[in-house]
Length: 385
Ligand code: GLA
Image (cartoon, rainbow, N blue to C red; front, side, top):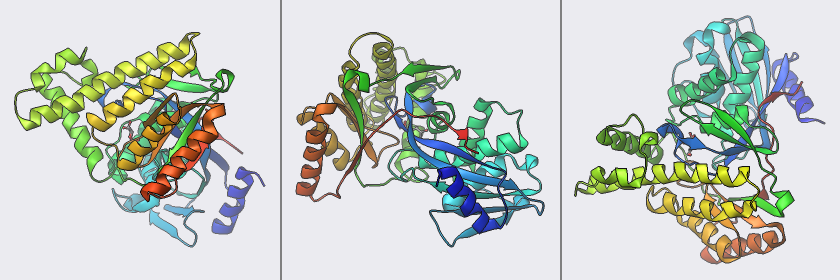
C-alpha cells in the first residue's frame, strides 16, 4: 500500500469519511550552516526521503480534530476559535499552530490525520515535516494565494509562537523548498535560493546520518540561550544581525575582559565562521573539484559548534572523532545541538568500516547503539493524492 493510501485509510478509520487530499513534507539534514538562520545568514540543507504525510479535510462544525498514526488512540480536538499558544501541546501543537496561523481561512474547522517516519528528536526536523505537511495542505485547500515563502512563515510561526520553540527558518524552508538531487542554498535574510546539485554518488561518496540516540527539545534550554547570546553580540557590535559582521577581526570589541564578553565572542565567532563555511562549501559544490573537498569544511564546522558555540555532546563528539579516525572525509553534528545526529561524509567503500567503528566505540563507551543510514537528497513538500 502506498504512503498516501495508508494515510487515507487511517483518515477514514479516524474520521469516517474521505480526506480531500494527502500531502507530504520531508525531514532535513543540514549539510552546513548551523545556527546561522536566526542570525540572517546562510544555510545549505537537503531534504530526506523520510516524510510526514497529512490527510486533511475541511469540517463545518468549527473544530480542529487531530489524529496521529504515531500516537494511536489519542484524538486531540478543540474549537478553532479557542486555539491558543501551548493548547494543545505535544505533537498536536505543530498542526494546531498551523491551523491557528491560518484560522481566518478555516472558520469551519479541519480534520487532520498525520502519519510520518521522520525520526523525532534526532536533529532531522520531524517537527517541520509535521507543520509543513499541514501548511501545504491548507494552502492548497483554502489559501492558494499564499506564496511558498509566506508558507514558510506560517510553519515557523506555528513553531515559534504556538509551540514556543524560538527557531529560525532553516527547517521549514528545507521542508518546503528542497528539490531531489540538490542542496538548497538559502540566504535567510533576503530569502533568495539556489538549488546546488549534490550528486555525491557520482564521486563515490556518501553522506551518512548517525543518530546518537540522545534527544533534544528546542522549546526549553540551550537553544534559546544561544539565540539570545547572538542577539546580544549583534547589539554590542552595533549591527542588525551577526550576518553583518564582515570577519572575525571585527569581533574584537566583544572581548571586553569580562567572562560574558568572552562567551559572546565565542558565540559570534561561530556564526561568522559558519557563514563563511557555507559559502566555501557552495563554492566547492558549484565547481568541478572533488566534492570530498567539503569534508574538512564540515569537520571545521563541528569544531566550531563544539568549542565556540558549545552545543555538542560527548556522544556527538565521539561519533565525529571515530568517523574521522576510521577514514571519513569529514564529519559534524547537525541541527540545533544538545543531542541528535551527526553527518559523516565518507567514501562508499569505507562506509561499512566507518559505521562499524562508530558502533563498536559506542558499545565500549556504554552509549546507546547508534543508527546509521545514508542520506539521499530528496524532494521537498508536495501533494501526494
Ligand atoms: C534547529 C532550528 C533551526 C536552526 C537549527 C540550527 O533545527 O529549528 O531553525 O536554527 O536548529 O542550525
